[in-house]
Amino acid sequence: IVQPAQDIRLSARAAGIIQRYAAEEGDTVKKDAPIIVLDDDQERAELAQAESILKGAKAELAHAEGEFERVKPLSEEQIFSDKQFAEARYAREIARSKVAQAEAALALAQVHLANRTIISPIEGIFLKKTKNVGESVERFEPVARIVDISYLETVVYCDASLFGSMTSNDQIAV
Image (cartoon, rainbow, N blue to C red; front, side, top):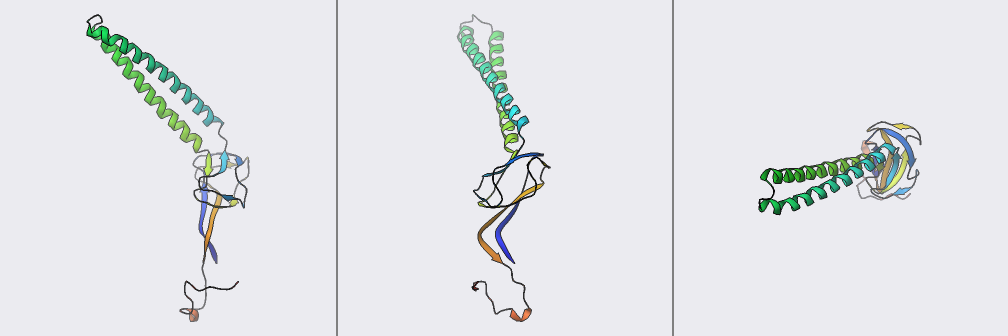
């Protein structure tokens, strides 16, 4: 039996419908190259929403920081009360928190979108697909095979009488 160095069955991280194959069976693929793309309309919309929320949160933070900087010298000169200064500082901290939350939501949306693409973990050959475009894929369901044939391993089954007559470095003419 001749075996490739690696034989990897790729699975989807998320359930979905196969939108397209980025490679065909028999193609040589690079490490981290996309193999299968699942439908991603919802994830793209979530990403756009997260980007918009972050933009608004940054604008709110810029306003709150400007207001804080405007109030700070007035508070030092006792023109603004301590309460008004504390409220400006509170508004700034809340705005910072909203930016951090929006950045986390954006990162999560990016992960969800990335999970819609199945990539090759190795350089190798796209050997086999198990589903066609338009078919559904369940989470962690094997959908493709990638093999690394940079070297091949040979497993020989033989009679016990041949033990010791072959070594791992023997070469066989084909």
